[in-house]
Length: 375
Image 1: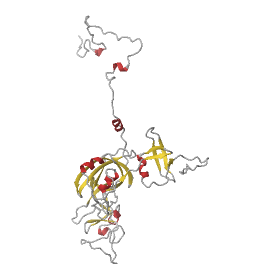
Image 2 (image 1 turned 135 degrees about the vertical axis):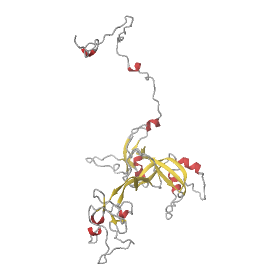
Image 3 (image 1 turned 90 degrees about the vertical axis):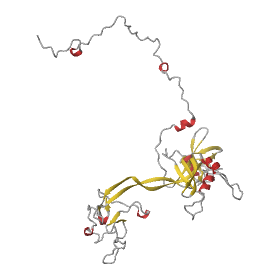
Image 4 (image 1 turned 180 degrees about the vertical axis):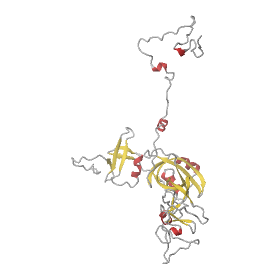
């Protein structure tokens, strides 16, 4: 009798034979799918949501657009803005008007957060200049205007401030450099040429938080007074007195001098810097972050409606800055028709009349209209 311990069991699929399935005769046999005479059923007949309707408001559809990467304006560039929020607050300069504004033009993309500007009644930050930032904002946005009468007048802030929301104006953009302490790291410092502080890769560290005239200059270290210097500073003793050589000349950082040698601790590239206690000198590597700011000077939005050959056109916000009075001759703007949406290029002619900025065919003589003069 043979040993069949490891033989495949009867009915298993190991020998290529599947288990049989017993079906009761009473089991219903599934019907075949019905044959369609004309065509397959339409998709709408099988879709339970075919009758649902998408409803929207125009402003909702305008907001539901693709994200556009933000490109900040250039330094000192004037940009058109719209006020999104306004409130009063007690700041460092007394009662202040806090205004948040966003770009009105689509030229810069989607700004991640609005500008925030703090306006006082008088420019307390610079008393030498006679400025009224808060009043300028009310006038530039059209909330207040002179009525030709003299005498003190008063209106509650509760009436003025809410009117600012949605108002348009123009202001200047500028940038400031701030220390990004979050990304700052400590690095071990080494001597470079003539005492310059270098990082581990031998790159000279530069001063970034002193006066603008020192910005970007190589950073040096005075082990005697235990303080950093910049290129051009005089080498001093512990009492901050200038150190002179035998010819009574000042020793200046960044310039070769016999006293700034390996014997004095300077000039030995790759030697770790030691302070007066013999401890290694550690430098905080601070990254500089450029932050965008908005000026407190509010400029009224120019008249965006112009006329060309008796037909009204509206100047796009991207061209609003070019219309700041007085408008210069040959100023070129983009204008569009509100009814048709047609866009054209317009130019301010020599006789203060807007004309179409059509290219002149060199093969044909230019007319006076092409030059901006009207007959």
